[in-house]
Structure formats: C-alpha cells, structure tokens
Amino acid sequence: MEIRSTTVAAPEIDADAIVIGVLSDRPLSGSAAQIDAASGGLLKRLVDRQELSAKPYDVTLLHTATGIKAPLVAVVGLGPADKFDRATLFRAASAASRALAAKARSQVAFYLDDLGQAALVEQGVAGAVVGCQGQDLYREKKARFAPTTIHWASNNLAAIETGRVLGEGINLTRRLVNEPPQEVYPESFAARAADVAKQFGLSIDVWDQAKLEAERCGSLLAVAKGSARPPRLVILEHRGGRAGDAPLALVGKGVTFDSGGLSLKPSDGMLTMKCDMAGAATVLGAMQTIARLRLPVNVIGLCGLVENMPSGTAMKLGDVLHARSGRTIEVQNTDAEGRLVLADVLNVALDRKPARIVDLATLTGACVVALGTDVAGLMSNDQPWCDTVARVSRELGEPTWQLPMFADHRLTDYRELINCPIADIRNVGEGRWGGAITAAKFLEEFVGTTPWVHMDIAGPAFFDKPKSWLDGGGSGMFVRTLVELAKGS
Ligand code: BES
Ligand code: MN
Ligand code: ZN
Image 1 (cartoon, helix red, strand yellow):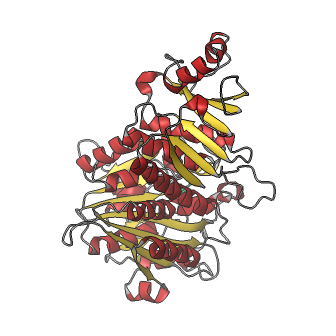
Image 2 (image 1 turned 90 degrees about the vertical axis):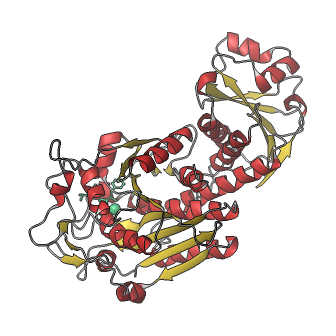
Image 3 (image 1 turned 45 degrees about the vertical axis):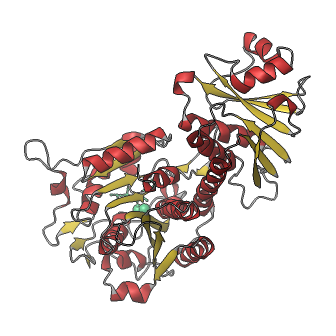
C-alpha cells in the first residue's frame, strides 16, 4: 500500500472512492460543503431526511452522486465540532478505511482534515492505514482489502509519512497479537524483533536460556520451566539522543501463551490467551516507529518472553523463587505469571539507569472488572510521570484511568497484601480483592526509586468483538501513546 498527498479538490479527484466527514452540529462544513455544492445539494437533502449519520464512526456509503468524479463517497460521522480532535480523526479515518476495505479498491482519497495541522494529519493517516488491515490472516476468503493507494488531502508530506510509519507500527503490534501461539513463541518473537532491529537500525541484544541463567533471572525462568519452548529477553535500543542522556525504558509482558500453568485456566479463560504478549508487541511496535521516525531521544525497549505451561517440569505452588534483584518470592498461583516475568525484566531495565519507565502488561482480569474492557489501568510510584502518561494517552484516544497505590497507615497499605511468612513477597494478594493493585504493588518492589508507570492493558489490548472503527483481535492500543511519550511530552 502506498500513501500519497493530494491537493485535488474532493469533487474532482479521479479515485475509486473518497472519504468525507460530517460534524453533527455543522454537517455541511469543510469537504462536505464542497461535495454538497458539486452534487447540487445532495448532502443537504440527505441530512434533512436524516439519512446521513453524524454519529461518531458511523459510515454511510453514497454511490454515484452526479457532479462527483469518484463513483463512491464514504461519509463518516465525526460527532460534535467541540470534540473533534486527533483522537476523533484517528478513529474516523480508521472507520472509513475499514468500511471501504470490505472490497478490493485501487485508489481511495481521504478528505478529513480541513485544518491541515501536522498532528491531525499524522493521526488521520495512521487511522487510515490501521483500518484497512484486518484479522483475516489465515482465511482463503479475505475480509479486508487494503487499497493500492491512499491519497490524503494535505500538502504536508512529512506529516503524511509520519502517519504511515505510525500506522505500520500499530499494524505490526496487531499482527503479532493476532498470529497464533504456535507461530509466536519466545524464540520466534525474538527473531521477529531482530528483523525489525536490522531493518530499521535498532541495536538488539537477545538473552537466551543460558544468559538468563547466568544473569540469575530466577523469577522469569521459573515461569518458562513448564514449557517446551525456551524463554528469551529482548533488549532493543534506539540512540537518538545525546550519549549521556538517561533513556526512557519501555517494558512489555510477553507471555506468548498463558495456560495458567499448574493453576490451569478453564478453557473459556484460556481461549484468547495468545494475546498475553500484547505488552511486548506494543513495545516492539513503538520501538519500530521510534526508530523509523529517528526521534532525537534515547529509548530502550525490553520484552520478557515466555510461555506459561503445565507439565512435569513446571513451577509448583509453594516454590520459592530467587529474583534477579535478590528478592525471594513464594509462588501461590502459577497463573499470576506476568508479574514474575516482569520482576526480572524491570530489574534488568534498572541496569541501564533509565530516567523513567513505562511497563505494559495484560496483567490482571481484576483490572478489566474495575475499568471495563476499553480502559487501561495506570499505577505508579511517581504522580507527575503518571499524570503525563494519563494526559497523553487520553489526548490520543487511548483511554486510561489511575488506580491508587496507597501506602498510608491512615488509609490503607496495599503492600501488606503481598506479605509472606516464608519469602519476601508472594505472587498473589491476600484474597482476590484489589487484584490489579496488588499486582502493581508486586511490580513496584522491582523498580527502586525510578519514576515508573505500570499500564494494565488486559482489557483494551485485545477486542473480543469488532468496533465500527477497528476489527476484532489485537488492537495496537498504546503504541501511539508510547511514541508520543518518547517525543518527550
Ligand atoms: N494474563 C492474565 C490476565 C488476563 C486476563 C489478561 C484476561 C487478559 C484478559 C494473567 O496472567 C492472569 O492470569 N492473572 C490472574 C491473576 C490471579 C491469579 C491473581 C487473573 O487475573 O485471574
Ligand atoms: Mn496468568
Ligand atoms: Zn498472563
């Protein structure tokens, strides 16, 4: 797929389809006004008869309007003008792109950005690139067909290119999450990361079983013990800043399949557990994007890759693990494996003396209970850094909400819930209440005093059913947030 800039007016462009937007309170503004005028008031008549939905991300297809060169006009609802921003535009472009991708088309032209600001163009183009890509990887009868060429109505070539790179980063993440666990396992994920690193100029270091043993990563290694697949730790590095500048560290949970281990999940709960490497896939998608955009900052990306399986060699309940940091952990539930992996990965991240850390993990069902499927939980040891992540993510339409990490005798101290009589900590809270927070309290033990935000993406990383603006499966959610954070927001 190719992305081009166009300055041809919407009614005149020679394309198979064009995309325009309608605001609910100003339906005939911008490119909609141009199309309306050229078609002798067609849009006005449709608006009057309530046949044109301005509801966000609804798409109405109009065939052969007289006066319009393109035989198909896709009208996407944008909602009210006061809520039209980058977040709206990403989803609107994605929704229109998805609707048009139901059939194979050659030339599709988008007229969604009347303001021409770079930040809007970037998000719009990224949405268009993401929407036409589906989850039909292994179907003979494809469900989505990316157009040969996307034309974007803007003369800002740099912003269009940035948007394309961003969209491709998101699609990499989605694809890795959607591929089945027999294809994506620790070694194969690491090989894919190595391909990305080579192609786009990232440094990469891959720790295999022997190196992980030499580095005493006893917590991560314990999770891998039950599997026939050996673990890997991938360390990617983008050096765009000054040599001495402390990097931003992006850390991802990469459990390529989570059966629960000996604390085996019921079949229903296991069904989508190929998605348990979404944190690592989000880090890889973001690192690819950061490298391609040559951002002038230092960023390291760490992916902890294991498969969590039950077997005669699996870790057991009651096992006491020796984490790389020196902390001891009693295993009380082998399905609380993500935190065991991240304990060592976060500790490795600290070796690089990062200025700030963000970790992403499909960590707890409890977070989905608390916030629903669309919103990620934020937990942090540093309020300013958490405020930044919250603001940036919400501005981009990647919803997050902070959960408390109280350690105050006048209120409550969540840390007490992971106290353990035999080891320093245990890997589950006392009882199931506050499960997202006790998981975060566990992680906090391994980040020292470095400003750190934990994002529990168990809900939004994977869509069980499609949205009007995105197919089901891996969502690629939070790639945009990570890239924006790397820009130094
Ligand atoms: N990978 C799961 C969490 C998850 C649940 C991700 C639903 C995506 C959707 C995690 O490893 C897990 O099993 N967590 C347990 C923790 C419990 C044993 C303390 C959970 O949430 O039940
Ligand atoms: Mn689990
Ligand atoms: Zn898991």
